[in-house]
Image (cartoon, rainbow, N blue to C red; front, side, top):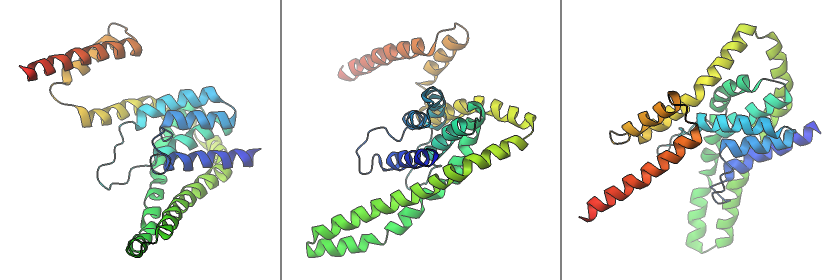
Length: 246
């Protein structure tokens, strides 16, 4: 059963990476979806949902600029949830480990791109010959390489890492585990801050402070703040459009 779970979870990782490349944009590569699927496979959907929502906040600010290679948020999410369920690691501690895991798996995004450069001149030559079958073959070879490079490390990490992580956890001092738990509470704020770094401007700043005041001092929940934000956005958009038409 454990072997089957490792295979299925590794397939979730591959599908999430291929989402947006060959499968269309189905949001499979978002932490909340990945974590829920891992929770379903490992038999604890509730933990998957809770951790997925938190990890979504952490990684939502990671945006690739140009050809930069980002930390592998998919690997960080999937392994954090899998370790939390399989190794009885607390969700907070597993979430704190998600960022180091994402950084460790970052080369997985570079290696297949380097290898797949081999097919580019071959595709050009096939296009000049009008050999569309060859182009299709090279295309799918690239997909296979992507799948292998992402599947193998994930499977090995799941198959051997769960027990290893459990052993390491038993030797980690309690003060360190408490530190990881506290750090996990800060990471969602870091994710939101990274996202704000891309969208912040002088016109949006008052609305951000308004949302903070409503939540921190008036006790309005996130759904209420989001609803008010939507209303303000519509009113603001209509005002800008009306001014532009005058």
